[in-house]
Image (tube, rainbow over all chains, first blue to last red; front, side):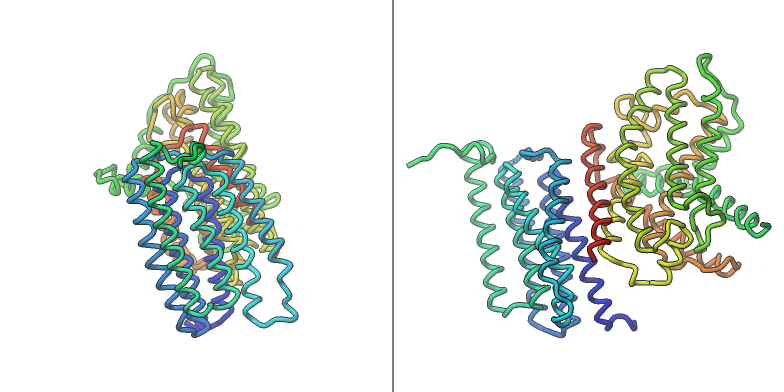
Length: 228
Length: 313
């Protein structure tokens, strides 16, 4: 295994996995089934954990392993289980009704990816930086696209639960950007973000359940009346 | 000249033998995954030989197109099979622009199949033809975009050259654009071979069938030729996928030892890809016809992103 310690090989692997993350994000936009969407999210988080693990391996920084393990446990296992339980409890319809139809939203996601690449291009100065930013070039573009597409998903979807999924995939984009640009923030910051996300997802989960109970639907466009 | 002839004959035999086998393996794996016993792996061979010995019925309304179609479908599929690298990086033939010719020869076969479906004037044939053309009109651009991505990174549309450059670069060949292109082409493969989210190869239910609807009037040797041609086309598309994106194990010369090793790797890769197809077929339900463009739109976007990202890096 001569190439296993070649940093360029690590760079390739990270870029490849980041591309797969992008493919999964586009698949989430094109997918109507809630359960499948949640599983795609779980798979995406698994790839993120793998990216973090690879970065930790090639930079010999142990605290990123902890971030990778946290991603693996929380986002790949705990959150999908939590969300699937909510789906089972509110007996939600499997279909998601987006505001914009699926082919067009997939096209828009493609456009947003382009925007991500163009924005990332302006951060790229290979002549004046060392290795980390060179790695960031590709991955940063994908991270920005993830963020934008997640945002678009939140705007486009009506069901509260898919909006939660959009938020979570936005957070995945942030995590990817942070980890590929800085090679890991201080551990305290990472743990803070993780618990933030976990708590947010739980609160939102309860909120979704309540909305479902009160209105017999999780369609947020039906939330028009204020109650005092 | 003689060298080309020998290579062509070897590859042709390989193509004719392996294609029904792959169909059989996919059917058996699918049956086992659904806890059915399923047909034997060699069942497609038996079907073909039985059909070849049977008589056939030709509708009175049929013109020469009806009789020409099976030969054209089979011929284009076999010709395309000679133009792609199977076990060695050098394909026996490389005619008119390599991969472009591959795509459009397949399109020619599909065009005549659609004409053959229309020719008898039966309503099912027309229905099948119009559906097939609708789907291929969206699948073809997606396929072209994905293939151009690979052609760009190899600097050639010649398939042998593409395979050679992929082998030379080894893992350096793996780039994000390749992943995007592979995902796009995989969806196209599912659509083009009429597999489950798009079409169901095992059904003759009039509301859902696409490929089978065009063949309803065919029987006997003609049907055998079309079925055989369809399985060769499936093998060709699968080979395109495994050998341009995962060129490991392709032998660089036409020696006996190289070919044997190449063949072993090739069959292994085909088996893996067949496993993926079976998983997709078993875990998905068939899409409604009007949802199929959504799936193909994803393939198209993936191909377009792949092409754009090769320019951006």
